[in-house]
Length: 198
Image 1: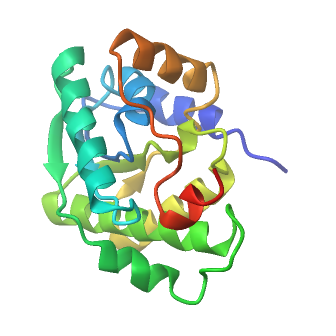
Image 2: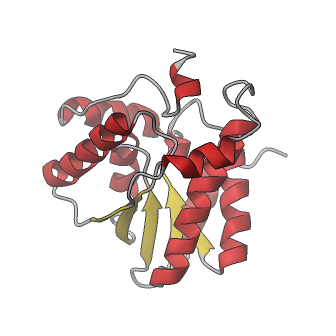
């Protein structure tokens, strides 16, 4: 039976007590825009920008710059944790999966890599919850993202916030906010393999 992760998030939000802390993995400013709009009323949000999959490094830095600009322009009370560029993390995770189709096993490894770093950081810094912006994209499988996130939440003893940010107009809202703030919108997911499919 297909799970409605947007509904699962709503259930979690309804059960919240107080204002917990949340570490949100963000891949870029456009994807985080609508997610932050939904999350900030309920959580003290900190973004973790950890994206070793983004190639080349100049693209990684460009997306980080725009992530910062979004936070400045939106005025949202969100902190930003910047992980240094560690392209070797992705290369190691993708080793042997170079010929996989876009959306296949290489992407699962990449999502898992970024979510595990988020879970580990959330545990280390004492966050109540962790989540990712990845589900806002219509190209990302919310079931895969949430299955990986929930498993890592159990492993690192940090609550995973279920989400499907593309639902309930989330993807359309991210485009609207990108236009409003004149954000840079990249044309590929991040790695060289996704760039070659554009």
